[in-house]
Length: 115
Image 1 (tube, rainbow, N blue to C red):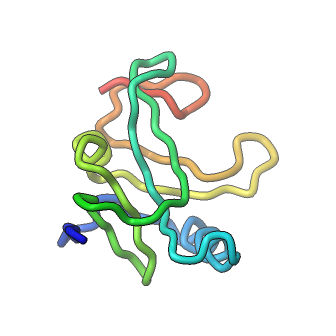
Image 2: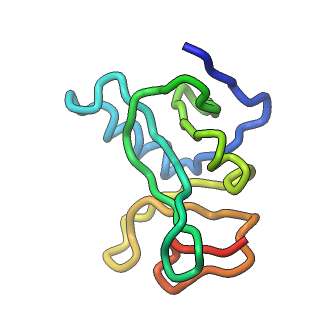
């Protein structure tokens, strides 16, 4: 399998995101999977990001942090470089969130952005 591990993490994880990822990845149904972050066209600002648990694919760029791998495809990498994944337990707006420094504007939901 062809992979590129970035010398500088392409995407960073906050301590709360690390802890939550470890909890999810400890479940049997996620065995052998990693966090995948990707971008696709859509949303009210033109682009939107998504996070999922997935197996590594040929050509993925891989960020490793504290023993956790974050997978990003080549198309998404151009938008996500330098981003941070965070996690909040808040009742409103909680869950995984991605902070994208390349985003010039975003919508109210926080998942759609424009570069």
